[in-house]
Image 1 (cartoon, rainbow, N blue to C red):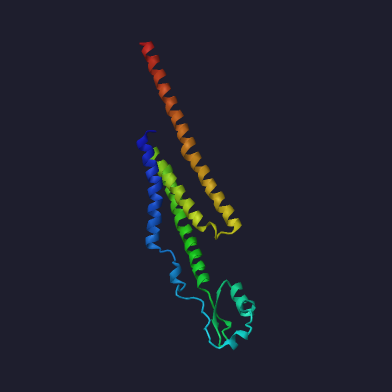
Image 2: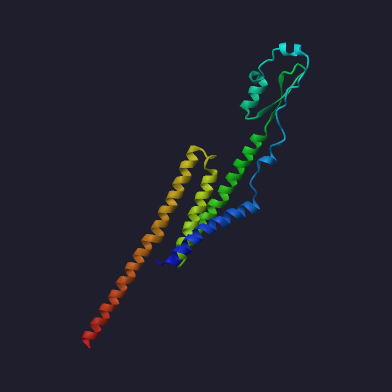
Length: 209
């Protein structure tokens, strides 16, 4: 295979998945952190009093309260304020990070179920293309697309689902090897045999003449 065909295979394998990724990002926007959490939110600071008697007050440990522990258990972020004694007290539980994580997981899940079938269709298209180098480029592009979709959703998958997805992709790769590589070799052998057979027949005819 010459350099031009190799360059074309690499170009298709790189640019086609890149196009799919950019197109999906344009039509299906990824969740942004600032859309869920207010960056201006910050922990309140204690008020400075000139009265020295205020320093003799012992403040309770707010992090050990049931409200704060419940907030942490629900994957929230506790927000505090200060009372008249300059002691930190629990105000509310902020669930913006949890909402953002849920939206990100949903996005990755949807992206996987869109891009993985598209990658599989690209691989199948590459198998049935007449041109070998164009077919190889499309097959590599489909595999890269499937790999990208799997990586995006891999951390949110269960252990069983991870094993099933990897097994399916492995079966697809083996199937590609059988359909594209082995069958092309058998076709080449049959063509060579037919050529040699026709050459032998032509030689026999010449001898008979």
